[in-house]
Image (cartoon, rainbow, N blue to C red; front, side, top):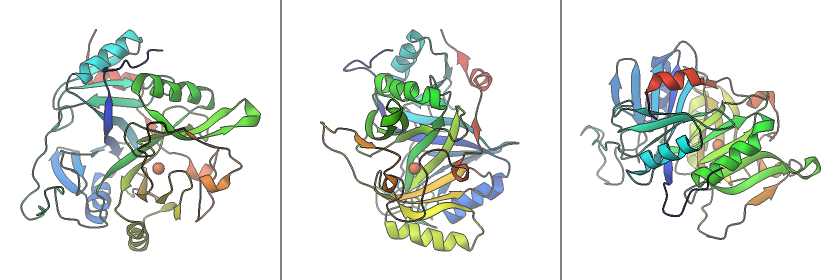
Length: 339
Ligand SMILES: [Fe+2]
């Protein structure tokens, strides 16, 4: 395992998720018309969207696909050279990585794509990305907003929550910390079972998590649990719940509030794809450089739900993902192999 050296490449933030949907129009209706995201660009059967507080080109890619799949979880790196430096680091670690050309995702520069060691989630790293102005009719007067707040007010992507097989979770989470510089902020483990890791909330920013990784309910690697989008206030989550009930959107859980992260949540399903989406607001931020990861056990049920419907942190069929990520073969199809 290689430790990211001081001055070495760094992950800066969550970038975008790319989701395949069997019903692109229905998914677009959900994300664009109901949640209020801006459709920045559409190329063929692929659409690029962003929240009203995102100045860069996109944070969500929707593309037509026979099945609901996750094509990639993208992270933006801190400096232009970090794409290549991470690529070299991956090769040195004998992790198969391919280079994606500029424009592989519209508006984006070159990227490196690989499967997360031990858990097989398809990750992409990039730096360059356009920052197009919104059309005048929806442009905000506020320079920090790309467009006016619309719909239910999704302002940005917030985090990814992915799952790994129990026997691989610890190694995958350790790799993220050692090789990618993620900090463990809160975690659930089982002291009676050799401190087996159940879930970990990791970040490279002051957020409690940019990425959560947890044990898979059905023991499989490479599963998405959900992708979360940020709303400004707790009350926005309640308004979203009220409005979306009237649009026959399936709720998995909530609204409620987590103990871990202290965020207000609503888990629901994109009606076009069935992908699980979390609407997320609140939470706290971490500025302490000496932050010690907060320890939870499954018996502390208020970690999952501070208030609202109970949520099992461990296996729970109601919270299982229906989506599998791309296999390695797809990774190699996506770009040009680079030695
Ligand atoms: Fe979440």
